[in-house]
Length: 399
Ligand SMILES: *Cc1c(COP(=O)(O)O)cnc(C)c1O
Image (cartoon, rainbow, N blue to C red; front, side, top):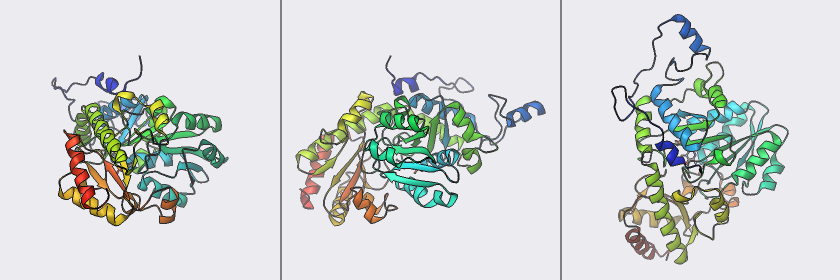
């Protein structure tokens, strides 16, 4: 049977300690041992199923991790306190002084800043390339390269990575392919397409209620064990651990992820279609005009659609700001960064989430001043929303 991420989540069954329909929340930072010998074995990593200390692992975090591993089709997963708290240990685990990373140039601003400004201090260098051009990616690989890094659908330009093609390159040069799948949970399953490690910011669609930050790394048991190793594991030692109460809360929100993703995708597709027909410069992977529309189609788990993110270019930052303020005033969404909320969120990435990227580089990658990034919400009547947005666009002279 074809891999279906939501079915796999549904097939997991957890009960609470007293027969509760939700797993019990384990609210402890430390755990007792019946014998000193078991404590020693646990430290050595030889006592499966025993808990030691909650920075290492905790039952609630393992439950959430297993649900996310089921979704991505990896052996296991490790949750973290934030998306950055998941991504940065992965890169530091895989690379040390003298190593090299080839990364997509259109990635989340925080990840970009980490690779551009922070890891060079540790002797790790990164080349940023146009990830949609495999020949350019291959050319950037050196004898020191350890990692290929990309987002399946990039932030904010919605470029689509050819995960199968990148995976073939990773195998050829013995590299690890690390994919941030934050923009396309359920829609794309990177590990099934050959990614070695899949990361998410749970802060976005997966939790979906904009009430916490969180992250996850999905991968092989061996790699996750490495991250958690008490002696040299980057997740264990850098300490970006999710709290148990929050892990339990995120797991409950995950129960509706498939329903939400379908609605986000439906609404975004509807608006993108209309905006494009109205003559607005619109980018959405579901549009036939998107340069990677066919590629996305070839990779996707069809029923979850092309995702909830779209961009339009209204020409200038002034117009973008005017339009966003007016839409917020009319309760069509919030002028806010982040994504995956029930309500539409919009921001101008050039001056917000991607402001870490220098202006000349923004230009080169096609990130223009007038770009507005939308995370389309779960609106019940998207035709009504469209009409109201159109009125705003006419009022500010964008249409
Ligand atoms: C938000 C985001 C991150 C960072 O996640 P946090 O939870 O904010 O730390 C990483 N990658 C992408 C694509 C994101 O959108």
